[in-house]
Image 1: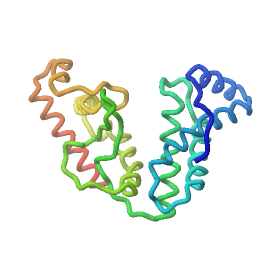
Image 2 (image 1 turned 120 degrees about the horizontal axis):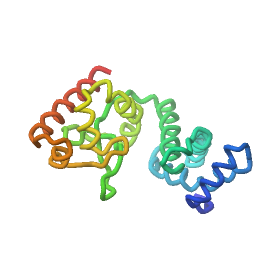
Image 3 (image 1 turned 45 degrees about the vertical axis):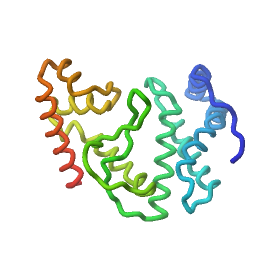
Length: 208
């Protein structure tokens, strides 16, 4: 794989994003070129598939360009974080279209990391068979759909507990005891709320 330019620093990224938003096309080119290393990094996840790496890089670059075009600089997240998801989604759509894999919902799709940097899963306490890399990536859109439906599926208290328990939507991941202290309720009550919420989410997966 070819050598790519060094990634932009946070200050450089902010500078070129502002220039791009002001209509400078050269700034967009710089943002693309300096983030190609990220494309290559994401594409590495797909090594071992029967796909040409140059084709994957090209598809991933399309995702990068879409990310730059739609990125909201007012949000606290870095462009690279947002772009990685867009690149992943672009590659996923290509694979799903080309391979025509059947949808299979998995509750074990990684959705974030804990304080130690380990991957966390929305329903990782539930038993489920492991899936191969294609099946795993083919479920990303379903999991994103689930996350989008959390507020509708859960009561306010259940939503509050699940977001804190699994560190969703910017919340810090907490233990049941920590959540109980924060909400001034018993740990056993937190456990019951979490269990009920997970059952609702499991049912949501089975009916959508």
